[in-house]
Image (cartoon, rainbow, N blue to C red):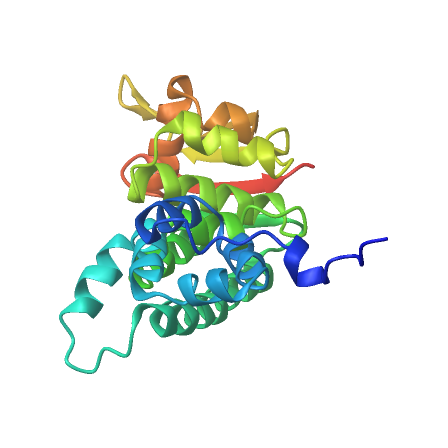
Length: 236
């Protein structure tokens, strides 16, 4: 009876696969899947450490930052850049989360603090993937989810349908917030009418649709002109 072949003879060999095709496969994966793929064999480990693969991953996540880093004389390689920048983004995102949580009173947030959190996301040049990793989580409250939604649509220019898809994949699309705003009373025949108070209860999915652009635009303007105050409260 013939002896059973050694285990290595049964393992698939990918050495025949052209590098460009292998990289094209790996580029389409999420980073966590690339790391898992690297543990499959020596071939994939070497390929998953290649600069061209990590350049593609960096461009997918931070296109502007990747362009700036490539021109730096101190550039150390795209894999190192990805790891270091991910750590920096995680640290700065945690600061934004802490700031919002500290400024939230009774699960409500004044629009000035809300806009300051969005400005911080702009200054750190967070990408849409960063928003999904750090703000579109069920552990984060609905106010943080809303900040991520607002930043993605109005600052990054992500199409609403892609934002809705991300909300649904993270199971937060049906979370509700209530937007309250207070308007200066109008003048009527020389008399100023009482200030007006209005509110709008809405889900995150609805806020991402085009028909709710006025609501997002009002949040983006904040308390200016006739609007005395804007407050956002999480409901679910």
